[in-house]
Length: 196
Image (cartoon, rainbow, N blue to C red; front, side, top):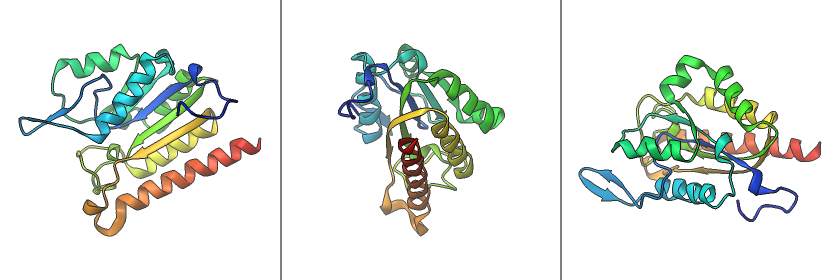
């Protein structure tokens, strides 16, 4: 992201993080079964957090959507707030609906360029079982697709990452299909935006 094309000033970009876990602060690990475990999702979130600390992302407009994973301490929420994230939990998403969440995201992002970071485990395991951290109560794939399409069509998307598909756990390739569809949709929207 920090090596994006010169025509986009990333010092004025924002982050839309779609993930089921909190913890964007500089933690080195998370806890599982009473022991600390390194996690690629945590590394990705730490990377985004360091970009916030370096001033590469605008914290007052960043947003964290889909949280439902376990909290390991009060600091998880404190850190999310410290970086200026507006948090929409998965349960909030259900209650608000796609249109309201998208409206909130568009309001926060405004005209600024934004970076979209999606962890596939934001989807409920019924729609994405092939991930290292499946967590019941997640988003439906149709809702995530609609939200991503709408936000990307009406904002200035400058980059994306889509992570945590684990083929070893992906029976029937359900997760791979969801991730590939998301990637295809986003690349198509980027192509349309480039042609404008």
